[in-house]
Length: 342
Image 1 (cartoon, rainbow, N blue to C red):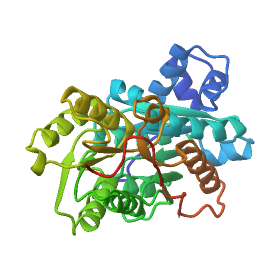
Image 2: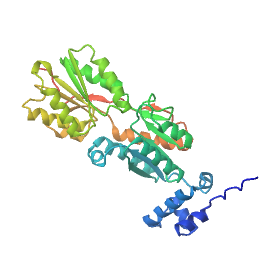
Image 3: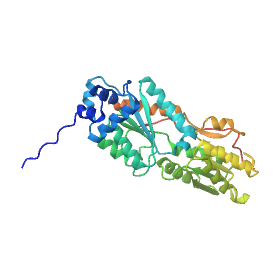
Image 4: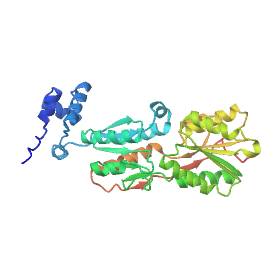
């Protein structure tokens, strides 16, 4: 017995389900003005329920271009709003999107499974022309997802983490080594690192590099955190409550927020920076220049990083030669928070 073919869902079916005209469906999926957001959401919901997406080929022939780029971030909203790195990175991405008259679709997610679902929904609904993927982990599922969908994407991370995707990254290992060697050259022999989330790939790269660079020191400590100021303060307090002969004389932080929190903890404990303990931040931002003393930092152009990622994504979308490549390695900027130990 021959099975009856399933009827093909059309734009007319989506319009009927959403209670709008076919023209309104076209406006929604081409990201054109003229629709209320509630109407646009109703159209996308109807399309998802029916399993319909506009033909990418048809949109290309009609002269459509990339109007929206996706970015999902697995961070709490409050923490993201306080982190200068992401604000600078997004501003760099936006600077390139503006040149292409495109927009950024930003979504905060709770975990990796949610992000995979979000990215797939965006692509199947043709809400985005490509995506920027950040915060890679070991055995990250997004490379396989991206290749299965045929979705253009650029991974922000070292190629060892990104499963063959086009990637743009900073050389974290070299930067960590430079930071440790600088502090050792000042005379520090007990150095600690307050690191980020342990499950992140770039944290693991920094951890391994610190272990290797600090191997010949008299003492070396590493503490994992969630990048927040509160976690940085707790880690600093735990490191500095030891007896003077058993505590670090210098601390490297994985971002600027934690370094600022560490500076406050040192003052709270009656320790002088840099006379009693030297502090070195990562992600040099305006925060590092507003403290007293000003914070030494591993500086890099985060705005330029974001812009380069966006340029590379447009190259991938257009089928160009935007292959994987690093951006300039963070460099040491000494300021008032580092000095030889007493």
